[in-house]
Length: 158
Ligand code: HEC
Image 1 (spheres, helix red, strand yellow):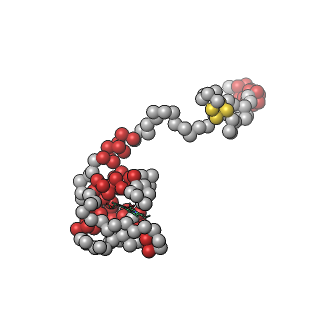
Image 2 (tube, rainbow, N blue to C red):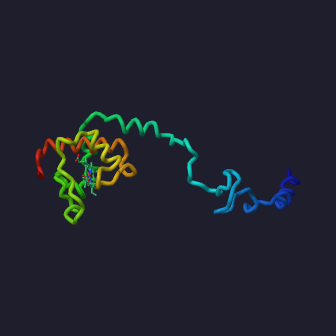
Image 3 (cartoon, helix red, strand yellow):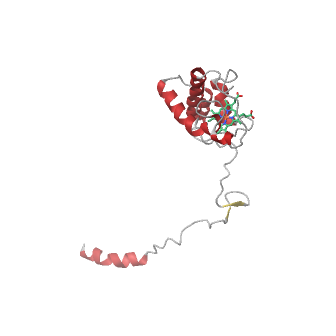
């Protein structure tokens, strides 16, 4: 036992623990992993699907049941993302519009939850898409709130 303890420092001294000597790729260097490719690539191989993609696709196409909680969430998100242009009342006279952005029409009969969710996802004319900022569940929540806005204030902004 004593001999083993004494021998320990000698054994450890023999090891090279330097982390500079390990297999690695240089930053911006090439790699054989991809043909003529860099060691680091953010190009996902063709056909790559995010783990939660099927669930997200399902959420984007299936409207949830409208509940008070959904409407509250929709109001919260609407105030953040939509009021700059559509205004709190939905009449399309938000701050950004008051400073020159094209005025959206007041929400009306032409809109339904699916169309609103679609406008959020893909954008609509001068309105840019929000797919990268608003999750599918929240798109439906906002769309439900827009329906509520229409019934609360029918015909406003005309
Ligand atoms: C930067 C300003 C802006 C923001 C922010 C914005 N919109 Fe719009 N929206 C517009 C404009 C402008 C139009 C009309 C576009 C056109 O006709 O070219 C429009 C159109 C729409 C329409 C279609 C209206 C119709 O005629 O059927 C819907 C629905 C809509 N927006 C919903 C939303 C929702 C919900 C949000 C928040 C997630 C939102 N918008 C955020 C500017 C905006």
